[in-house]
Image 1 (cartoon, rainbow, N blue to C red):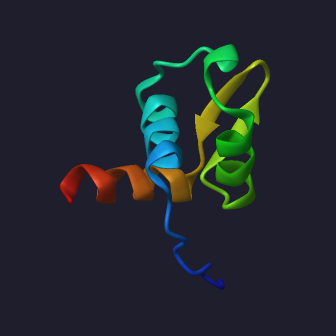
Image 2: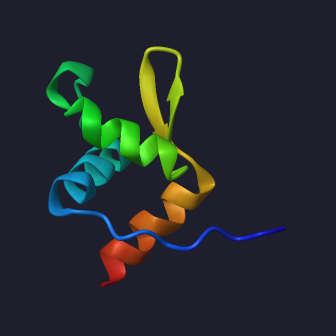
Length: 67
């Protein structure tokens, strides 16, 4: 299995990722550009009408919370 390089997130993308992780989201409240980039990086995915973390996203959130 090939690993993707870890991309740096800007502060707004980090906040968006953490909001998705906490389930504290309203899709209308999230900047579309941030969500699109997080999806491109494989950190979040659309699940019906909601967003959820991918396995990579879960690891990134754990890293952010430790750091």
